[in-house]
Length: 317
Image (tube, rainbow, N blue to C red; front, side, top):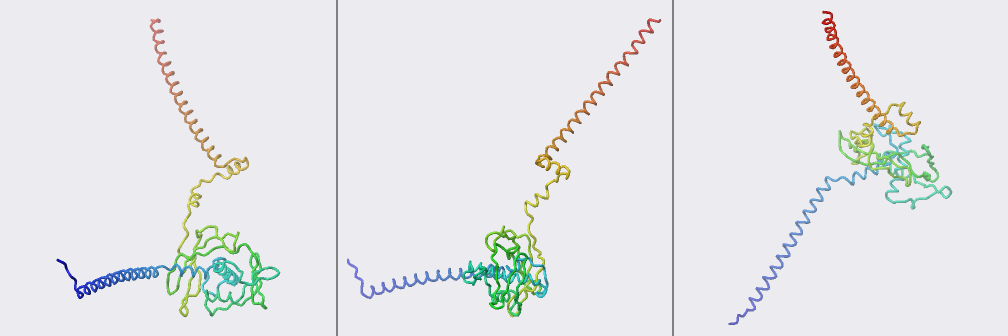
């Protein structure tokens, strides 16, 4: 017997299939939406605890100062004038190198080929670090091994071509608020003076300093520098150096004059001392044994004498 599907039944089946497909699509979209919301929530929570970008921002701000290892100060008016000028100029140079990779977009002196750094960029760097109210009177200044010349006509600093400058590289390791100020703990990484303008010998800070920022008009600006509670970890090499037993100065000098390895000399002397001690011990033992033997012989002789006297007495009788 054949089963016939009426047009109404056929339409109802199609409507049911469409509803099923629509329901499946809604479920898939709901699952996608749930995972999207969860992912966004995780990223939001991670961003609340991750201040990597902020730490990098403060590294860029403080790089110029850290380069020249300024002394602690309380109040920006108490910072050394030369250090501030060095930090302003070379902080700009560092930012240009980090952001652009070269100085092709800047003018150069046609004769000396020195870089011409506009004073407005120095002002912008100081405004980000110290606040817009701070103003620096631009002029030429002397560094340890070079002169930074400021041209009033062009309002530019002439930067000599050099292989390296500065003593340390900045690495922000911590940020915290205390007594209304923002403390930025900076690790000082020793610099190398070969190759590029800025390079490092290692990635391990040798000391730490806290830069203090005060909030003004919604932004944080530098107001002081102090010693940090964070201290560099003692390296294994320094521990080994502390455990080394030093030679006597006269012995060391004699070893150097003879061209002998001081460690070998110390080892040989220690071995000879041990041998001498052993020989002395053996000699003492031999002497004690000899003394005991002599005492035994003497006792035997004394034991024989009375016997002889007894014989003589018997003969006389």
